[in-house]
Structure formats: C-alpha cells, structure tokens
Image (cartoon, rainbow, N blue to C red; front, top):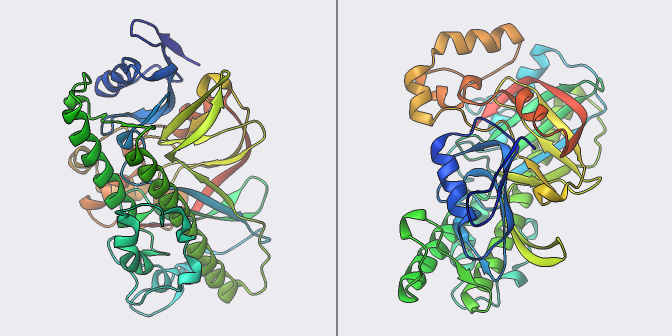
Amino acid sequence: MKQVISTEQKPIKMWLDDMEPSALAQAKNLANLPFTFKHVAIMPDAHCGYGMPIGGVLATQGVVIPNAVGVDIGCGMCAVRTSLTDISSEQLKQVLGSEREKTGIRSRIPLGFKHHKRAREEALMPDLALVEKVKKSKVLEQYQAALKQLGTLGGGNHFIEIQKGDDSHIWLMVHSGSRNLGLKVATMYNKLAVKLNERWHSQIPKKWELAFLPLDTEHAWDYIYEMRYCVEFALASRTLMMEKIKECLTEVMGAVSFDPMINIAHNYASQEHHFGEDVIVHRKGATSARQGEIGIIPGSQGSTSYIVQGKGNPESYCSCSHGAGRLMGRKQAQKLLNLEQEKNRLDQLGVIHGLRSKRDLDEAASAYKDIDTVMANQTDLVDILVSLKPLAVIKG
C-alpha cells in the first residue's frame, strides 16, 4: 500500500501515489457515503470513471450501487495455456485469418459493434432461473438480441491475444464483457436508483453519480439477480470465443492440448464477509485476489500481461488491479499520440497488431499506465506466476 488518506468519513487506502485529481475526488465521495464500510480501496491502475474510479473497491452495508459496478457488467479476462512452445509469424497470421476470406479468428468472432447474423444455441446461455423471479426483467427483454451477441468481442479495450509465456508455452487470452445486455441492465437500474433517491430525498448529491438501492427493497435484488446473469453471460461469451480460438489454432498447428481456462471478472458486486461483517463488495475495474486464487492482469497493447496468484490481503478486500489503467482519455490519446511511433514500437517488438489510423490510438500502449509500475505497486496483493509477452493482437 502506498498511502492512506484519512480526512474523510472513512479512510481511503491507495496502492498508487499518482492518482489524477478527478479520480481522487470520486474516491473521496465514496469515503463520505453513509453506508461505506471500513475504508475505500483504490488499486494501482485507478483512473476516473462514472461515479466511482475504475480500479476502485467499495464495500457497503445495506445497499448496492449500480454505478459502482459500471455499464459493462461482468467484463473480465480468460486465459489458456497451450502445449505449444513455438509459433511462427506466418502461422500466427493464419490463425488470426481474414473476415473477408472467411478464415481464422476474424471470420468466427465478430468484432466491434458486430453481432452474429444468427442466434447462438440457447444451451450455451446461462440458466434463466436467476432472472425469472424479476417482474420486469431487462435480461428477458433483451434475451433474443443477446443470443446474437454471445461469443462476440465488442469494442473499446477488448482484445484477443496470442502470447509467449516465460514458462516457454504459447498462451491464448481474451478480454471481453456482457456487450449490450450488460449496458441495458446497468442503465435501467441506475436510472431507477436515481429516480428513487430523488423520491426519498437522499442527502447524497446527485452529481456524485452514486445512486443506491437498499437491500431491503425488491429493486435491489432485481438488480443483483440481473447483474449476476450478466456476469454469467460474459463468462459464457468468453468461453465460446476461446473455443473458436482453439479451433483456429489447431487447424493451423495440428494437434494441440489445452490447460483448463482461467477466468476472472472485474466489474461486479458480490456478497462477501470482511472484517467480521457481511458486506456488498463492488469491484469496478478490480479483480478478486483471495489467498491462492489464480487471476489475470493484462497489460496494454504490446506490453506484458501476467498470470497471478492472490495473497488475500484484507486491506484491499482481497482484490488487485484489473490491468494497466488508462493514462489518457480516448480522444486525448487520438489527439496527442503519434501513429507512426506507436506502430513502429509494436513492429520492433515483433507484435502482429491492428494499428492502422489515428482512430486506433485510443488503445495504443502509450495511452495506458506502465504495467510494470502497476505490478510493483501491488506486491502485497499478488504474486506473479507467469509473465506473458504478446505475439499477436486483435482489438475490438
């Protein structure tokens, strides 16, 4: 831990010393909520978000806060170690393939805003029992659309990478979320919370964007059930994409064996027990890092990613960072970064990438914090098991 700020109602414990003022102001808002438990934990990749810093961990008593989870509910990582120890650039290009030529990953996993033209099999979707008890379920309303979103990557910072580990193995990694389904659920329940807070004359300023739902209301549990479904949907989507990536790899490389998939989510709320109390832990851009738990901390495009093992540090509510964290906003990166320099950097590293225009600079490595600094700031939260260098990247 780098520092503790104790001037608010509750302390703020931070694993970084260079937090941007806007994100620090949001952390102070969290610390001054009447239902915040014990302290606020800020991970080393933290930056400004909606209402709550991305890279924040908030434990509450008696309420759940939709904006403390965020709009991409269940967004997370999965990774698989393969039996391969080598793959050439030409083979990598074949695995990545071409949408136009109907080959490889690009022909099987829709990217960006694209969805499948046909619905996926319902057997691949999570059990609807989670949401059948919700009277006006947004999940059920969006279910048919979600069948075409399942197994699609999305845009923004979502990616597929093929990597080489310092364990000598080739690894596969996917970063994705719950697509439009999670956005619809998050938006609906945050709007509901805002409306109800106004009706109750809540003393929490609306401008903080931290409207809450009390756990003794049906609304809160409706949100929790639908949020849980979105987490499961995001996992099902990553699982399907990983199966498609495996297929593409074996078509090019022949017989390949695969270890069990590692999965970790970083936008969700869960009922947990900390410091002797039952609380709701909101992780927004933070991952669980319980004692012995295996997790994934990705770098930015072209930088190292890590397979880690949690240390179960109670001060972080058994959490760690979810990645490198943004250093620049998207528009700022597109305006300030040099396209040729960013392309040359990846080319010199030998990474097959998709940087083509200034529009792509919002996901360039220089738009993010240094992952090595982030990892150095959380040695009391996780141990590094495997370091992964990127070989090829597909961005949403």
